[in-house]
Each structure stands twice: as C-alpha cells, then as structure tokens.
Image 1 (cartoon, rainbow over the protein chains, first blue to last red):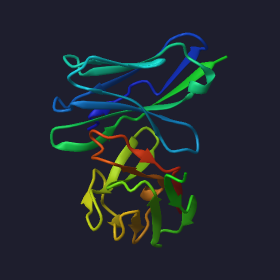
Image 2: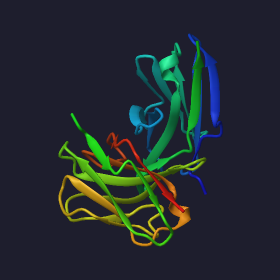
Image 3: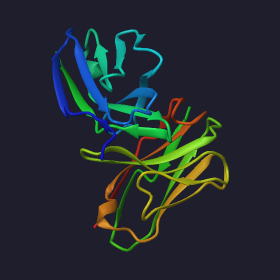
Length: 112
Length: 114
C-alpha cells in the first residue's frame, strides 16, 4: 500500500520547455513534502520542500505546488536543462509517520 | 568534504552469508537512516537512529540489524543473506528528524545475493 505515488515512471521534455513531475499521496496526516533528485551512481540530493501551510514554494527554476484537497503535489522546472536529467523522488511525512515516505521516482530526460 | 560515506560500494554474497555495511558521517548529525532502493519501489526505510546508542525499525526491518555505537557511525548487518535482499542500500543523516529536515545521502552500496 504505497502512501506516496508517482504514477509516471518516465518523462521526456525538450530543453527550454517546462517539466512537470507529479506526485499523489493518500495519508491525510502528511504535512511536509520534499523533492529529491538522483543522478546515476550517486545518492539522492535534496531539491525543494513545502509545508502544508503553503500551496507554493519557489527556488530559482524549481517550483513546488501543493493541492491539499486533491492530495497532489507537483514539481515544475522552468526552463528545463539537460543537466536536470535525473530521477526525481517525491517524499512526505506527518502524523504518526515522522520519517519520510518516498515515492517510486520519475526519470526525467531533458532532450537538447 | 566527505559528508556521508558508505563502505563497501559493491558486494556479492551467497545465500546464507553475513555481512555488515558501514555508514560514516562527518557532519555531527544526530539522525541516521538506512534505506533500500528497488525498481518501482522507491526508497524504503529499513532502520533509523535518533542518536548515539538508539535504533528503531522502519518500514522493512526484517532480516536486518543495526547498531549506532558511535554518533558518526551507523552499521547495517545482514545475518543470513537472502536473494530478496539484493538491492541498492543508501545511508542518510540529518540534523533533525527527516520529517522536517533535509537528508544527506551517501552514494549507495550495491548488494547482490546469489
């Protein structure tokens, strides 16, 4: 029973266009959400986070949107660059689950 | 600037053998974690520690044991390896609990159990 779901295993985008990565969760107690990026043969690295008291958080080219009523969050990358090609993991925590629960990841490929 | 270091990076075991994965962090973090990554499953928490001398079970603890005798080290042990434990293992550490703080990950240890 996956509480954090990333239904798209892969996504391809042209350089310069917008990349939108989606994440759904089922646990209504989750109140903190993070995105991590992972390159091959490396560990995941933190990208951006959002608390449930907000619906948007921006950091440069990266914006995370949270829709609590739909239990959905998305990561927007604008403009996308070839160096953004990586696996992106969504993660969430809250309620009794004080440790992070990760999604299965989405492989983003930005085509030059 | 080492951060989180895992050893070994690669290991092949036969069913029933035992081994220990070592994680070391030089950031003076209180919290440390062991995750496994499997295709289509994302990262799943095996065990974690909220400070020296403490350990707790995560989502998938069966078949693993851990110890945190020193603040900077977190060991993951497999007493009797099984093919189902073939995976990539990641250690991570953080200042505060992973639910509000950023996790810093090691590069991973790829384990194959034949």
